Length: 226
Ligand code: NI
Image 1: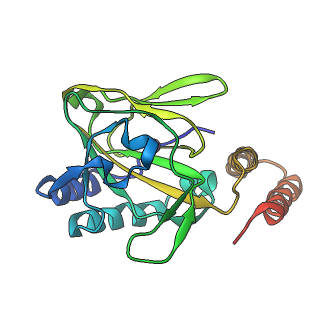
Image 2: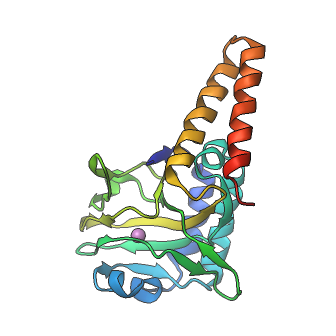
Image 3: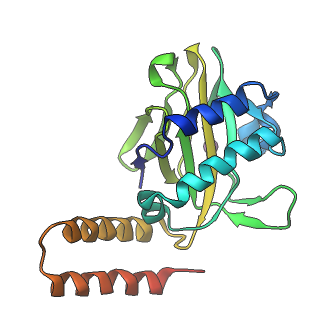
């Protein structure tokens, strides 16, 4: 399931992150790449342990905690600390699948990577190219969103970032270990929760809604690892 989550960051949060990362020192993006993806990764990244990355990451994690669509779609158990990348003209990231397991730097904590997340920090009119292309069984989907918008997609999917030909594309990216590891089960729960929230906002029958909400929670009870 590929889900767009709009307006995760508002303008003050975007400019706070921009101020933090603009003057920071950028390193070769291959620092966090696995063996296969290192061959095709050509971008810049903020050092994971830099104060700028940590502070900017905290702004994002706080914003996520208040975002019902993110919670509903990802059902997060653990969120990997956000990383920041930058693509200048000529930079790209060829097709790859994200690593299955990652250790949180400076800890012994390992995450199973179920969901991949890209949060766009640059306005789309500020650069050409740079689409995130995600493949699923319906083909390839090119994603280029407004600054502050986010896309979440299964970490198991093949994806790439097209070459940037003008301007600079800045983004945050991170991963989630979900309470529900199976993408099909997560999709079903997200569809159901979205319908329940829409019905709740309408004048739907309270008794039927209660039974439906009960089904949602009982499915989650079947599938959740917490
Ligand atoms: Ni990736």
